[in-house]
Image 1 (cartoon, helix red, strand yellow):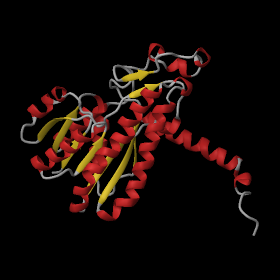
Image 2 (cartoon, one colour):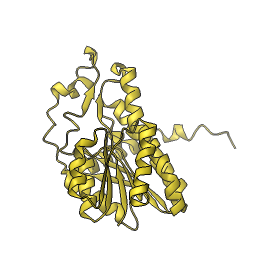
Image 3 (cartoon, helix red, strand yellow):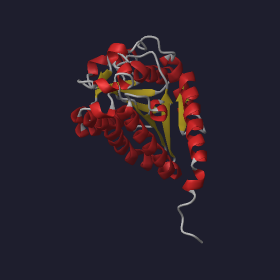
Image 4 (tube, one colour):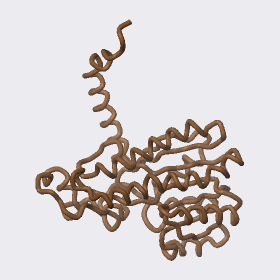
Length: 276
């Protein structure tokens, strides 16, 4: 049995992760900005749950959540950075305040929680940190440049952390889900306030008013959560975990496209060293 701290448990994948962790016998600190939205999870598992209010953009709340987890369960063994939301805008359309908020939640919020749990994990010489990325980081669809950027940053951070902390018994996993049937493309999706007409045929087609994906995504959150728990419990977990057929297909297509470009320009790429 391990102690999990999961951010963003009110709905969607975060809630599914918590339910799967409970089902596997783990203690779980379930969090949301509004603690009332996760109180039912704690009530259903009174001996194994702690419900806390947690806004990952708030330093004090992050520190308090980790301290409360340590006091109740003795420490955080598994951190799952799931809190976040979608944002769609052409790059030119992105509002500065909206973009800063997006980065503060996804990137710096992830950094806050990681730095809060690492001292305890280092002391125990064990721990697993799971950071939610997205297949969007790989395929970068039009209108999702800022969202893809924050998730790409989370991935790079995770892979460096893996190399830095493996000798301390600390594992880091980046998770790239595809489309799951959650509120991500519905209630949780935000977008630029003022679209620019010149982007109507690219980013504009993916604005909420034109999007028909919500409610039809292929991914089952419960199945995705079971795969995540299996990865965390594995003796040899992946450092990059794809969830969904669309994620696997998109990842491979993007990788092949990138390799084709590398091959096409390889002579020029190799021409820039000093002559021997």
